[in-house]
Image 1: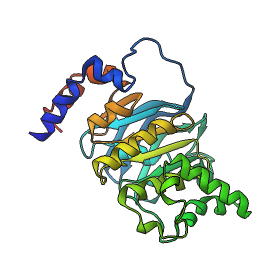
Image 2 (image 1 turned 120 degrees about the vertical axis):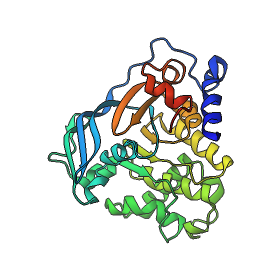
Image 3 (image 1 turned 30 degrees about the vertical axis):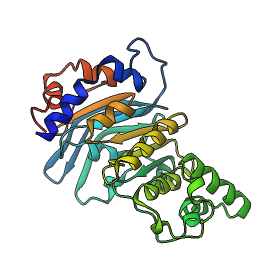
Length: 281
């Protein structure tokens, strides 16, 4: 019942509500270059066919949200973008995924890939070290040792994560001492400290309270000015609020991908409409 109520509230957003989040313009939008391109990808976990002939293009400096019921393949595809699935036993991938035209499963250094494609997970996972060292960890790993340069990077990253004013006087405190919402923003600061081009977010607010959720959503919309964001979410209202485009997955298939307003107000596939109206999922 709760799922159907949520779906109905999204469907009832209408023009006025979409206008509040910048979705009222359904005409031509500025064209952004493709940053990630997925072409005929099939992914298997042993004998399980988890992704089925998926093709999608992810534009730069936009937020693309993946929605769909649990087990539909959206997080599986997200983890392909920085090759996190390399750690899964018996995982096999066919097809191609390119970052700026270069196949990331061909001759591509995975360390470099994960510098260019950062990730924020469902549950905040700060390292058991100071707030400062959490943010400086990646830059240090890239060879930056100069204290002044590190100080500037830490401050810049924390500012961009909307956390600097809250922690600037306790940078030596443990990252684990922060609240859940602050920890998630710390993880975002840690991810952007290495200057990635793409930021992946896997259910980034599902473990947060409503106020922290709003803060992370606002942060995501600010970050898209400089980054490409791909967000997996079960929250359709969140997808409607923050996304430029939405992709709906079902049983390992990409059913539909399009501008957010079009997906929510006039989906082209009956399965998308059924999901959005709470008939399943």
